[in-house]
Length: 472
Ligand code: HEM
Image (tube, rainbow, N blue to C red; front, side):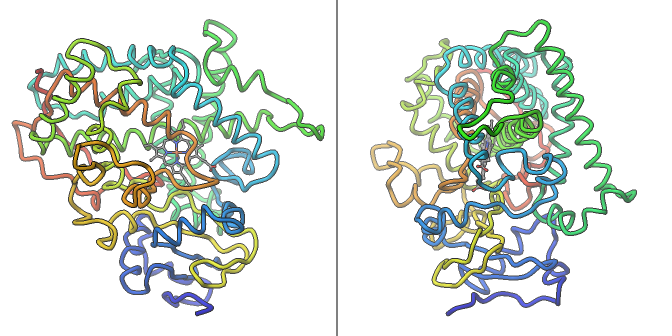
C-alpha cells in the first residue's frame, strides 16, 4: 500500500491529453470513482496527489506533522509572474516573513469584516443603489449580474480605500476587467501548463495577452489608489494601513512588507473578494428563483429577526439559522473553488497510509467531496435543511455534517476572508429577502441551477440568466 493507485499517462506529459485542463475537477470526480479517495498521477513532469476523502483531508491539513508539511504551495505561473515572485499571501509557500504577512492581512480583513461598525454602515450604504435598482426593475425580466457586481465592487472599494466611487468611477471597471482576466489565467489547469512553459507568455497567444492585460490593469489600479490616497480619500481603507506598514522590519531586521507585497496582496484580496462572493450571490439568486416556498420561509425569518423596514445588522446573522444554512448549502452545492488553491509537500510524508514524496502537488478535491453520496444524501440536490437540527437551529461546527464542509479550506492555508465574505453575503441576501421575492422570468423558462454547468476558472462562475424581482 506504499504507492497510491492512479492513471498512468504518458512519459513526461502524463495525463494532460486525457483532461480538459480548464475543468480539471470534472475528471477528478470521475477518477475518484475509478481509483478511490486517494490517487496520484503525473502531468508535465510533476507528481499530483488527489485527496477526495474528508477524513484524509482533515488528517492531512489539521494534524501535525502533516499539517505543516502540506502547507506549501506548488510553483505556479500566477505566483511567479503575476504576483512578483510570490510576494503575496495566497500563492507563496510559508516562511517567517510570509507568516507575518498573512497574520497582518488576516487582521486587516477581520477588523474590516466584522469588528468595524463603520464598514457595516458602509455596506448598508452600498445596498442603497442595489435596492434602488431592484425597485426600478421590479417585475421586469432582468439579468442580475450587473446589480450584484456593483454591490460587490463597491464593498471592495470600501475595504481598500474607505469609499466607493460607484459603477462609473475610476476603479470598478478596472477591477472587473482585471478579475475576469485573473480568473482565467490562475485556473489550476491553465496555470499548470504555463508554469512548465512560461516562455508561452512571449508568444502571440490569447493566454499571453490575458497575462499582460491583467498586469497592466493592476498597475493602473495601483496608480489610481496612490493618487486617491494622496488626495481626497479618508484614511480608513486597508491600502492606507498597508502604506503605513511599508518597509517595517521584523525582529531580525528584515523588511517584511514592501512595495511588491502591496502589489501582490491587493491582487489576492480583490480576486478573493470578487470572484468568490460574486459566484455565491449569483448562484443563490438563481437557486432561490426556483424555490418560492424556501423564499417564503426565509422572508418569515428575516421579518421576525430584522423587521420589514430596519437595515440588517451583522449581529442579526446568528439569529437567522435558515439563511445561514442556505448560504452554506449554496457553497457546498456549487463548490466553486473546486480544488481550493493547490498545496504541495515541503518534505516526504505519509498521507492516507501512502508514502508521498517531497514537492508532490496536493489536490484537495473538495468538488468531489462535496458531491459524494458517501457523505451527502442526494449531493446534486439543494437541501439547506441538511445543516439544521430538528428545531431549525444551525448544527454546531463540531457536528459530523459541518465537518464535511470545506468550502473555505482547512487549517494553515484556510481562507482569511471568510468572515468578511459571510458578512457581505448575509447583508445582501437578508436585504433582498426583506424587500423582494425572486421570481422566474416572464420571457422564458429558467432551468434549475446545475453546478456542473458553471463556467471554468480558479473560481467557477454561474452562467448568465434572467429573473424578476417582485417587490413585497
Ligand atoms: C464565498 C467566499 C469565499 C470562499 C468560498 C473562499 C474560499 C477560499 C479557499 C477555498 C481558499 C484556499 C484554501 C486552501 O488553499 O487550502 C481561500 C484562500 C484565500 N482567500 Fe478566500 N474565499 C472567499 C472569500 C474571500 C475574501 C472575501 C477574501 C478577501 C477579502 C479572501 C481572501 C483569501 C486569501 C488571501 C486566501 C489565501 C490564504 C492562504 O493561502 O494562506 N477570500 N479562500
